[in-house]
Image 1 (cartoon, rainbow, N blue to C red):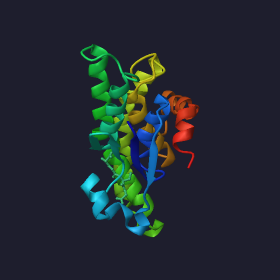
Image 2 (cartoon, rainbow, N blue to C red):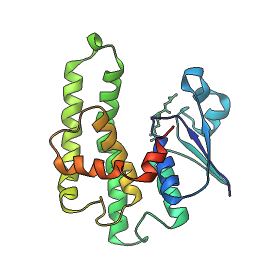
Image 3 (cartoon, rainbow, N blue to C red):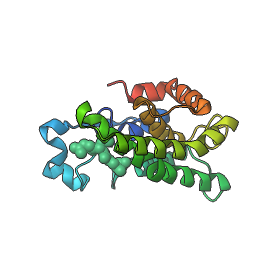
Image 4 (tube, protein in one colour):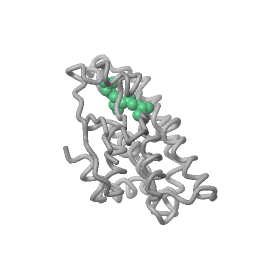
Length: 200
Ligand SMILES: N[C@@H](CCC(=O)N[C@@H](CS)C(=O)NCC(=O)O)C(=O)O
């Protein structure tokens, strides 16, 4: 069944692309250009009601939300995730939701400030978002001090979502003082599938 991913480079749509690359699945990349209004077209709003990326079409499955798409793809293939009903699967859910609800919001705030001209940046908001991001990253520093991946020895779809957030924080120079997380980011950046997911 053909897989089609709606995609804008350097956005959350790289997450499901990374999973597709890890799984070695053939897929079509439908590139959209937000500067031309392509993410707000009627066709795209029918796929993603807020006009965001990613969105995925997989036969009868039409799905949006980056973490949900990543989880769906892993589940579809029975790869990159622990068996359903196991304690490890519970932790997979925990870290996926943690990434989306604890790590992401301060990054959204930091990115919004970074996009402003320097003179218009709100130093208080930057400092607050930086503090909240580091507080949310701290439990992961403890986990990744012990194990190479979020769920232990095996790379999973949780690493795509958590790792994408940490790499986003790193790109904003917000990830400081956590050596295990820096080493984890370096490990993720060595993965051929990650390299392919951000190549173009
Ligand atoms: N919670 C959503 C957020 C999606 C989102 O905000 N995507 C941004 C890029 S990272 C987007 O589509 N921006 C383009 C636009 O709004 O035109 C997800 O994780 O999929």
